[in-house]
Amino acid sequence: MYKLWATIRKDLRILTRDKVGLTLMFAMPVLLVMVITSVQNSTFELVNDNKVPLLLCNKDSGQAAKELQAAIGKVGMFEVVLADKQETDEQIKTRMHAKDALVAIVIPADFSAKINARARDVAEKALKDFGVRENVDKAADSMQPITLYYHPVLQQSFRQSIQGALQSVLQLVESKEVVRHLYFSINEKPIPDSLETAIVSNQVPIREEPVSRNGSRHLPNASQHNVPAWTIFAMFFVVISLGSAVVREKLNGSFIRLKTLPTSYAIALLSKQLTYICVTLLQAMVIFSLGVWFFPVIGLPALNLPADIGGLLLVTLICGWCATSFAICIGVFAQTQEQANGFGAVSIVILAAIGGLLVPSFAMPDSFKTIIMLSPLHWCLEAYYGLFLEGGKLKDIFLNILPLLAITLLIQLITFGGLKKKKLI
Image (cartoon, rainbow, N blue to C red; front, side):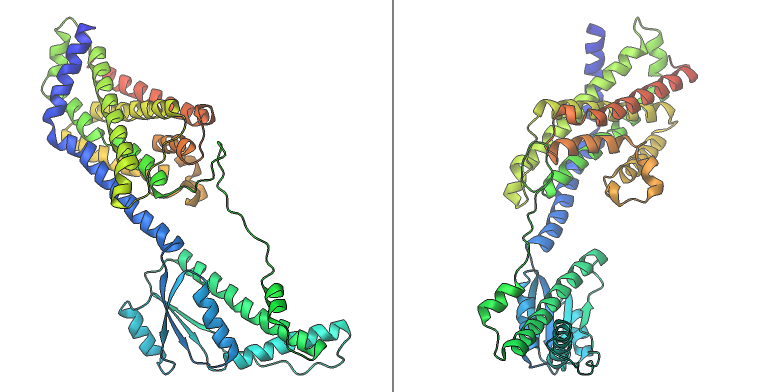
């Protein structure tokens, strides 16, 4: 026990001297978590809370065009800026290039007339099917489409959301006109406003509820998604410090000197693992604490810790063990510190990319489904998400912990084989 404690003290002294390594292990992950969470939270707010600037050019003075304009304003996702009806399409595009708006809608001059004609055609066809009318007038000419301009910075998914909202508004306006024509044709008087509202607005309500194991109905926020993910990234980035330390010991002859002492390298490996597992636990504690207490101060959503704190501690411990095992493995096989730092950093980024930290796993092509399973960061992330997002307990994420343990043991075996091959043990 004394030999192990002495080795741990030695590793701690080496660690505290590595200023760059400490910065990469603590300062960089903290900054990364704050920046990524802020960016993603701004995206969530853009979709959910903030409004997209929309330039609306209504070239029609009819009733249907006015209703469409009012309905667009009621959608809730647009900050409508009215443009002069005399503005040309080129002038509207110029204003969009100047970032006056990200989206522009141009309602053509014959919009109301064509909507009324289309509604009348639909109403007459319905009346013919009811047996009220015998003849149907000639179908109305096709109407000029509504032009939707968008700034290239808008992604396709967001443009589709805007198009869906616009289609819903157009359908609402046209449905109102059809109902009015049908009622007037049958009763020969305008439809009462209350009846029109009851018919058009008669929609089935939708209840949104996240799937949670503990019955919680709190919607996951940007902190719940990003803090666990980038905590894992921080843990695995100990490869910069630990991998370099292993390489230094190989190059300066520490392994050879250990053979002359009444101890074994197994104690040195155990010391490094225990020391850096404690470092990863400290990383998680710092980042989680920032999410809980500091994020609300800077306007970000607070991190809600899972109910199973014991499960959270165990998952963090296993993730830290896997990260230190990977770092030691890189240090054993690397010939120089530059190789350890370069290959270690690049490999972590690649494992994070295929593991779902950079791009969600469900968004990856089918060809990546098998490769994802090989990334330890994927299983770390799934275990954390099971606790943070799904509200699960340790028994619910057990199937995510088993593959992570298997990968960790495999890395340990590879490290042992490398040490035997290099005759370091």
